[in-house]
Amino acid sequence: MKQIILINPNLVVQRNDPFTTGIVYMPVGLAYVAASLREAGIPVQVIDSFAERPRQVQRVDKFTLLGLTCDEVLTRLPQDAGLVFLFALNLTNHIAAERIVRAIKQGRPDLPVVILENTQAVTAYSLRQVMGVFFEAGADYVLTGEGECCAVELARALWGQGDHKPLDQLEGLGSPSFFNPPGNVIEDLDALPFPAWDLFPLENYWKLRFAHGPQSEDRYLPLLTSRGCPYPCRFCVTPATNGQKWRARSAVNVVDEVEYFLDEFGVHEFHIEDLNPTVSDSRTREIAGEIIRRGLKITWKIVAGTKVETIRSEETLDLMAQSGCRYISISPETGSPRVLKLMRKPFDLDHAVRLVKHMHRVGIRSQACFVLGFPGETEEDLQMTWDLARELTRLGVDEIAQFIITPVPGSAIFGELRGYTSLSEMNFTPTWRADYRRLSKFRLRLYVAFLWWKLRHDPGKIVWQLSNFLRRRFETKMEMVPYRALVLKWLDILGSVR
Image 1 (cartoon, rainbow, N blue to C red):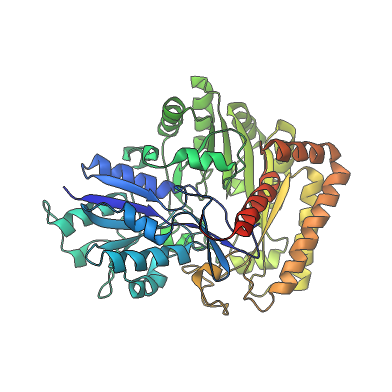
Image 2 (tube, one colour):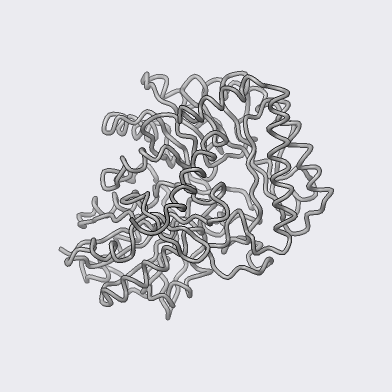
C-alpha cells in the first residue's frame, strides 16, 4: 500500500523580532492525524521540517527559516509515497509551507499535496480564506475542519479503496474548482487514539530548552484536553474554525494519556494547548482529582491561555495546585471596557483579580496577556491597559505578554488592516502597520515598567527568575523568551545553511 507523508513546516522567525516570533509549537494536531491514519491501517511517515534539523538556518527575505531545506524534504519523500499532507501549523510559518508545496510540485508533480488546517490554535488561520494562495503554489487540495477522520476518507477516495464519496462531496475538502464546508465536529474525543509522538523527533524538541510554554523539565509534551471555544472574540480565528462550539475529553481519558506518555517516554511535564480548557469547572476538578488519585508526580501548565472566569473558585485552584498545576495564562486583553465591547470579549475583572491573588498564594505562576492596536483603540484605552497591568502586577501576576493585533485570515477583523505583503508578516510584530512604531514604543515602555513594578513589589521573585534563566529551568515565559531570542539571534548570525 502507498504511504501517506505528513509534513510539519519549518519554524519561521521574523529577523527583527526573535522575541514574539519563532515560538516553537509541537504539532499536536498533526500527531493526532498520524495516529488516526495508522489506526485505519494506512502506512504513514512524518517529515518534521523544523525539528529534524532545528538549528539549520536559511534566510528568506526578512525571515529566518529553521530546519530542513526544500531539497532535503524532497530527498526524504519515499518513492512509494502516494499522498502528502502539509500541516498549516501557524500563520507565521506560511512562507515555509508555501515553499515546500512549490518544491514538491516541481520535484514530484504527480504526487498529490493536501494542505491540512490547524483548527486548535489562535495562531493558525482559516484555509478557506487563503486557499487560493496555496493553489497558486501548486497544492491540489485543502482540508478544513478536524482532520482525523477526513484524512482517512480522503486517502481512500483518492486511492479508490472501499466505499467512499466522490471527492467533490467530501466534507471540508477544497480544490481549485470546488469547496465543501467542514461537516460535523468530532463529538466523542475519547474515541481518538493518542497522538503518535513516536513518529516525531522528540529529542530534538526537548534539547532546544524552549517551547510555547515555559519548559522546566528535560522532557515535555503538549496536551489537547478539549477542542473549540464558545466565545466570539473578533480578533480571533477560533470562531471561524470551530463555530463557537466546545467539546471535552473525559478526565479519565486525559489522565490516561498523561500516564501513558509518562510510562512510554518518561515525560513528567505537560503543556495544555487547548483554546479554552477550563470551560467546565467540574471537569477541571475531575482532571486534578484523577491525577491525585493515581499518585502521578507530574507538572502541568495551561500555556495557551484560558478564560479565567471559567475557573470558578479558589477551591478549584487549590485542587489544581495540589495535582501539579504550576502555570496559568489568562487574557484580560485590554484595560478598556469600551475596547472589550468592540472585541466582543467578556472579562470579569474582579474575578480575575481574586484568582490572580490566589494563584500567587498557592504557587501557580500566572501570565496576563494583552492585545494592542485593536481597530478603534485610543490613547486613553492604552492608558487603561497600562493601569490594569500595574494593578495585576501589584497583586502578584508573574508576567505579562503584549501582542500587537494582526488581522488573521478567518477572524472578524480580517480585511480591516492592510499593508502586509506576505501572510507570514501577519504576526504579533506587524511592522507593516502604519501605527506600528507608536504601538511598539508603548509595548516596550510597558515591559520596562512591569519589570520595575515587579522589582518594587516582589524583588525576591525577580532574583529567582534570573536564577531560572541561568539554569534553563523556566517557570515563566518571561524567563524563557530571552533565552530563546538569544539562541535564535545567534543562529541567524551564523548565517546560511550548515
